[in-house]
Image (cartoon, rainbow, N blue to C red; front, top):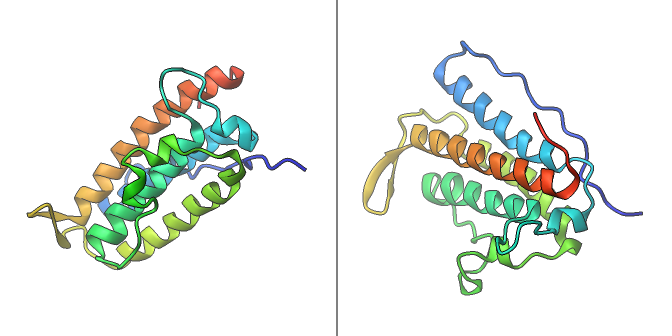
Length: 171
């Protein structure tokens, strides 16, 4: 049996919630939107790069956002001793370049696991909680805003890739 990315229900977040819940709701919406764009595709389809010379694929986006989640929430904010998702010697674009359809299901599940670990790293912490990034002070609030923007941008990429793969558009 060929693995296919499962169907995904996207959360319906509040538009009037307190700031923390609002930011988490938007992040969760965009997180699941990425997976929504992948729903029903096989591992091979997720790994396909339909727009040469771009190295963009849905699997690459999954891998990239796993890396981004870990870097911001766990490594920078929580200062956990978490290993990089991709060893540095593989290069900064390993998440997009080193694509193997045989690893699609594990990468997909790894992203969902990383979401849980990211949420745990931020749980109970104030949006004003501070950390140092490249010698500058920053806050957990900035991470939420940065990740919402990162996911939103990459969901736009996912829209285009999906349309090129099978014509699916929208939502």
